[in-house]
Length: 407
Image (cartoon, rainbow, N blue to C red; front, side):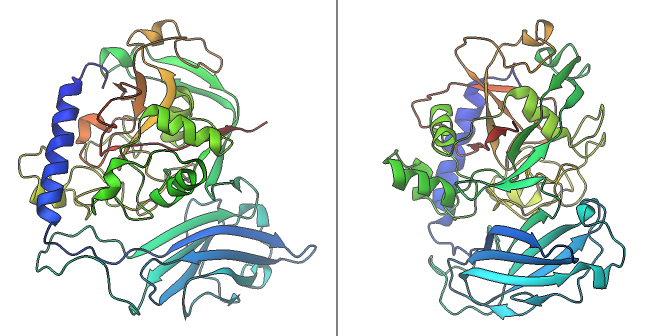
């Protein structure tokens, strides 16, 4: 929120860092999730057979099973279990590149429009071949991560980028930005029209950011030293706006504008307080917030009472339900940098067409809340601001995702 003091965030950063180090000095890091990446789909025209190729990485080196489910309504519901699928799915395997599967969609779903088909691949840990890293512990507080999910469509509304990030196409159009019941910097509610754009399906991960560091020599995030924040499929944290902007340029992308971010976060919902509706209590699977599990570690925190997402620190990307556009973790997990400079009064003078924020400023916009945010920070219109080059190398709850023009 714009009016909130940076001191509170800095205090939390120091508290979380110290507590995280102390707590995990004798705790075991549990299994890393196998991660499905680089999905590609080809249709054997004019048939209804689709050929799927993908890679799977598993830092543990364990066995896992790749499962597949599908949607026939553009990802609204996943009720189809493909029966005629063959290849590297529905059986135990090990990590590797060039995995493949073939599915005769027409055989399982006669007459279905292929443009409405969306598939979801799950990589679920099986028997461990190699031991986990970390020290032994009898602690019951863990950052559990046992599966990863990747969703893709046959109709071409997603694309694979240089950094192996899946991006989702957000259609052009108007939406109502801001809130009449939020903080002063969220007012007035105003109509904004944005051109079509792509936005990352997931937040940028440690694994992806490492590719950037290795390729450019850019400084590594300080939080990679700590086991609560350095799993390959966790979102990268401790990145300044300048770090995030440098990564985006390297990847041939950019940071989303604040208007683009809010449109994507709303997921097509109109006038709702939260990304899931108007209830202040999130539904199960809504995201990684300040919850009952976090309260066991950070006992003085204000949490969302009764909500438990199972994580006390940042969760691997894609662990929770996507929004209406098929984007994951827009609310919670980590705050996300936007391209815009922050101005608490900008909404009263914002242009209608593709607003990009003030020309200059001292702090940049952050959106979305994080893994230690309660319901007040999780409103979809909520705004925050932060120094773009904070000398403490930013916070353990700040990350980002990228955007790209659709043209």
